[in-house]
Image: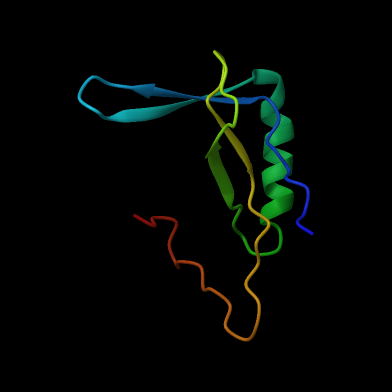
Length: 91
């Protein structure tokens, strides 16, 4: 049985598509939700130093939001754990 997804409250994501085939995801965060989001992300990152998030298309997009965002709770199993990059600059 899979874990219940922990969606980020107060966040709306809307995809904008361009005539040339490109697209962007516009993310809006309610002002009132910023402190709660910061605490949530800090709690999630407490163990590994990273907060992994998943952005996925909604099954039923509406005018406000086409995508949702939630905490990725996957953890490596076995002996070899994934090593996080040494730098914050991962690109």
